Image 1 (tube, rainbow, N blue to C red):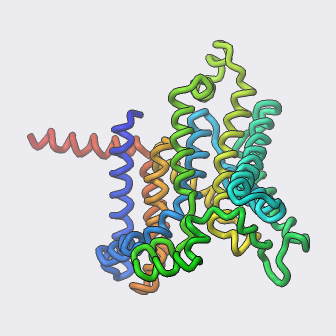
Image 2 (cartoon, one colour):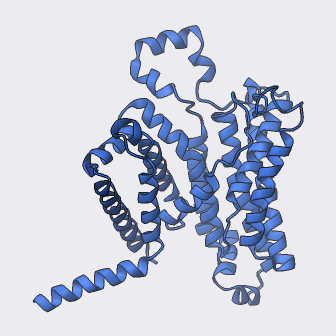
Image 3 (tube, helix red, strand yellow):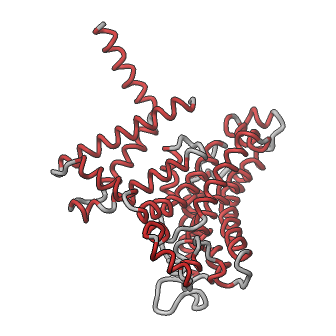
Length: 367
């Protein structure tokens, strides 16, 4: 599908989702305009809201890129959630146990998380290429293995904080929060007290994650569009038999593709631990970012660069929608319905073609 057509379908799908959400709101006796006003202002109405939207968007942008990359190579990466979880495990262990200088420590911790996520993807690719195990099944199973592995690790007293369900906090040297030390310094406190807008912007755990996500999106796009590796991986996705006839190693390509996808999802988990939840520690829970990444990838039309605005939209709707209950007294789950309808229509471009054809036919009959 051409990029212009995909953009058109995405915009129409978003509008249809908002219209469907309006119907649900009206049924509940709520003014849709007021509700969407709360959502928009709740996402971007204040500087700290904007920061939280950006912070929340980073993991779903990266997991979306992971899913999009695998899909472009003919594979379904349903295991982004498990890769995200093991990535957070790797970053937490490296961030807590390793004693390294401040600049080197976060880089090593990020790589540990990303490599562990890559290993999770590698296992899926290996099972697919060597034993013909469907990647959907193996990646789903590995999601649960990653989840229970995180629970198991928290049973160790050297990792689990006493009387808590969390791990110990990462060391300050591994933290990637933006200007973290400066904000608590004497000069930082004085500056922020005099500049309210910066104080609000930097109050949430703003970190380098969004910069990393943008760089990763560009790199993945470049790999797919401009490199021999990308051409080979996409060729395998389009037609395995033709690619093999052309001399491309199918088994190697599938392993490489899933390893790269896992690397990106693992990086998402590492960024969350090092930039957002590091002071709290790792928790025994599934965050759901891997599954949200699948939705972001669909909205973005499996384009790595388009995952950035799609992730920001998704995060904004979720964060702003969370304020519906306190502002209007209605359930914030209505925003999940809106997102679900958007994804439904994005996944059904032929239906939109049919609707467009019907309208054109009616206009032709009138003329």
